Amino acid sequence: MPPAELARIHAASFTTPRPWSEAELTQLLADSACFLVTSAQGFLLARAVLDEAEILTLAIDPVARRQGQARALIHDFEGICRAKGVENAYLEVAADNTAALALYHAAGFVVKGRRPRYYRSPEGTLKDAEIMGKVIA
Image (cartoon, rainbow, N blue to C red):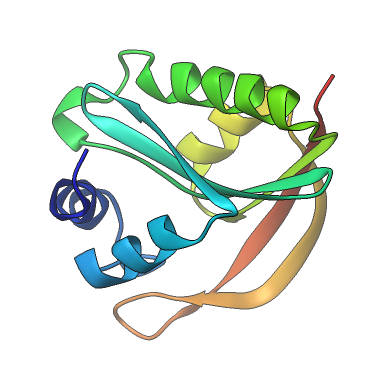
């Protein structure tokens, strides 16, 4: 999936945190620690260093949500992590993003902490982020 399409899906998926540009996504994809997992209408971008991985973002085109693509991306992410020797995975998610929290909880992630006032909405409101983690077995 080319960076322009990733940026389009990301922009359609997020206002908080702000969507990433094609240039930002291109730069992340050039990082040898980063890897991309794609589905028909979505993607998961992650970074793995030694035995830890972080989900940087997961975006599904709004027209394709609730079809299992996000669950499949997380499943594929975990398989890649195992192949890389990753033992722990982490992510941050807006504390008010109930759909994402439910998805990650269902995938076995648990809340490890909170970052107060971490995200800024387009209106300028500061929102907390939940730090979630999972042991990759």
